Image (cartoon, rainbow, N blue to C red):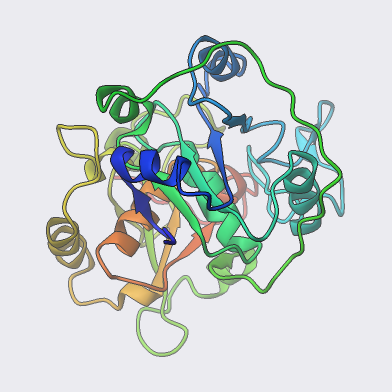
Length: 298
C-alpha cells in the first residue's frame, strides 16, 4: 500500500512489518537552536529513522560572508534556500534512499519541519511520501518503540530524478503575477506566519516587517487539532474555502518566512482535496531582501 499525504502511527506499524521497502526520516528542528533537533533525535527516534537536518540536508549551504547560497547551488533565495534537485537527490542516495521506497517523515513540532522534506520529495518526483500524523508523540502514544543515539548511515545508492510532482514558484513568477487575481495567471498568496508578523507589528528574523501585498494570512498551526493531528479533511476544506472566498485553490502560492512553515498549509490543502497549490520557497525572507519590492502592513 502507498501513502502520499498522511500516515497514522498504526499504519506505520503495519508498514514496518509488511516487507515493503521504506525509509523513515526524523526532521525535528528548532529555528532558534540549530543543534537542538539532532539532540532530540539522539534522545529518542523511531528505530532506523534517518535524521534530516533543515540547514545541512534540506537547504543549500550559505556563504557566511554574504548569508546567501553560492551561485548555481540553490533553487531559491531566502534564509533556507532550496538546494538544487541534483544535490538533494545526491543526499537521498547517500543515506540509502531509492525510488522504490515509501518515505515517512515526522517531527515533534506539528509537521512544521517534516513538511519541508515531504514537499522536496514530491519536487524530485517521489510520489510515495507521507507525514506521520501526530508526529513522534502519536507514535509513542500508540506504543511505538523508540531508539536513542546517533546514526550515520552511508550508502552509494543513486536516487534517480523524475519530473516534479508539485509546483515551485520563484520570486520572479510571484512578482510578475502580483496583481493577477483572475484568469490563467491568477495568483493567491497565503502567508503562514503569525498574525503580528504578517501585519508588520514585529519581525524577529528578517530585516523588514510586513507582508507581500495582497497576501492572505493563515497560521500554519491552525491545521492541527487538539490531538496533535491534522484536522479532518472536511473541516480543513471548509476553512480553506472560507479563506479563499471563491478564489481557485489551484492559484494558491504558499509562503512563510523562509519556505518551511508554509508546508503544513499546503499539505492540509492536499488532505482536503484542494489540489494544485505551489510553494514560494524563498518566501518573505527572499522578498524583503530587495528594497525595491513592495511591502504591505496592517
